[in-house]
Amino acid sequence: MALKQSVPGENAAGGKPPGSLVFSVRTKGLVVFGALIAYAVIIALFVFHQKNQLLRDFEEIQKSLEVDSMLKQADTAAFHAVMGVFANVDSSDRQAGMQRIQMHYQILRTKHAELQEAVPAFDVRLDAADAALEEAFRDASRENMSQLIVELIKTKNEFTNLAEQSQQARSRMSERYRMQTDSVAMTTMFLGMMGLALLGTIMALFFKQLTEDLRTLQQRAIDIVNGYRGEPIPIRRHDEVGQLMEAVNSMATALDKREKELIVERQKYFHQEKMAAIGALAAGVAHEIGNPIAAISGIAQDMRERREAGLGFCAEDYCKDCRPDLIQAQAQRLAAITREIQEFASPQPAEPQLLDLNAQLRSTTSLIRYDKRLRGVELRLDLDHNLPAIDGVADQLTQVIMNLLINAMDALESVKDRPPTVVISTRQEGDRVCMAVADNGSGMEKDVLERVFEAFFTTKPAGKGTGLGLSLCYSIMKNHGGSIEIESTPGVGTQVKAYFPLNET
Image (tube, rainbow, N blue to C red; front, side, top):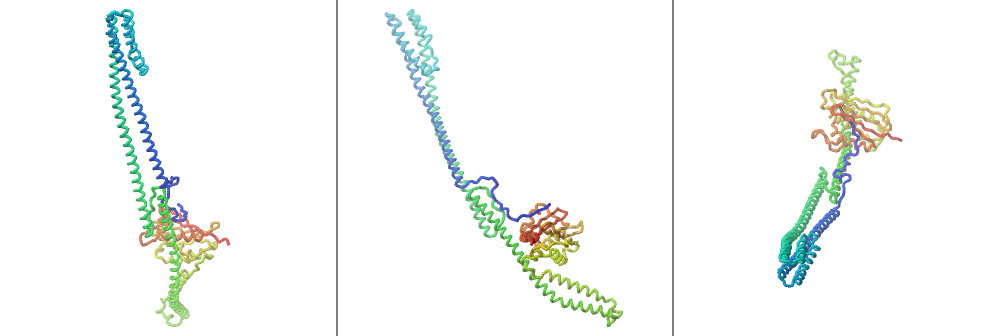
């Protein structure tokens, strides 16, 4: 598992998803206005449709009235025909009587024809009456005249029944027309009220959400001013307010990034100040204890020379267990440690210069060996003796080495089943130099590995780590034009590789 880190903290949270549509507040207003117009058009179309239906029903009622009038006229004509037959059944002038009957019957036929033309479905037939009239013309006997009267009365009864049915149908149509009119009025009023209610609800929800989002923005702006850099505002809208939320999120992310970079830069400055203070202290300590160490070493050397020359008390038997060589060896060791501290903490130029990476590693590891966390830990150096010089700042390079070694030592604290080991190696890879710090410690899970370079991210308990170590290493390597990679396997170990570009000049 390997991680090559890009610039930490550059992903601005809270952005709109790719391909999402952006609707401005003005566009939303136009959409609502368009929907309102469309709704009004639908209501108008409904009203016009119902109006046409009502007009058709009204025309049917009018036609029913006309048919009813024609039926009454036909019924009256049939009645007059019957009365004409009654009036002329015993007429002395048969020819004149039959002509009067023929005249009344002709009126009946005319009204019957008008009904058939107006109502094609008209089913009253005059066939039987026509036959009875012909028979009466042929033989104007009382029997034939009586048969004609019977047929005419049947026809009249049919007209009467049809007229009653027409009236009943017209009554039903009138009732339906009234109910339909009421229904259209109620439906139109309901649709209008529902549209107003829906519009009011949409406007209330819109302005409620807008007010809540603006309050959220106001509160987050106050929080940002007060130093809050937590989770970004969730963006649920894609208009000007959503763009403002995204801008506030981006601002908070940018401020957080700048603050972390500032803290890292301050850590670099504090490191330089600390190294300068340690250097001054080391110089003072070396000066104060240098003379006693030199005196002790001189006395031990004198004792050793006297013993070898057989002079003074050092030659007596009771002084034979005295070991001035051991005193001198330990004094020389103290002097070497003092020199290492002095060399490590001596002021270094703040500007980049050609450096011997192997020398920096030896100097740093020689001092850090005295850390109690390295007791029982095998620290090996596998350095390429032909390694070319790199261009860098000595203090910052020392800081990278120390941070990586401290992380390795912390990772080895939980190792019990194998000898804890840290291996530092250097080699040239093409046009860059690689420094690798490997340990066989606890390793890191994938989710931890993905965040190791984030400022203030740490898995160490409170008070033991700040989460700035690897972030500072990343910043220093970036300023040196290099890069840093981490390979880690849980339960196996971790290897950190720092790459330095070679000076082409």
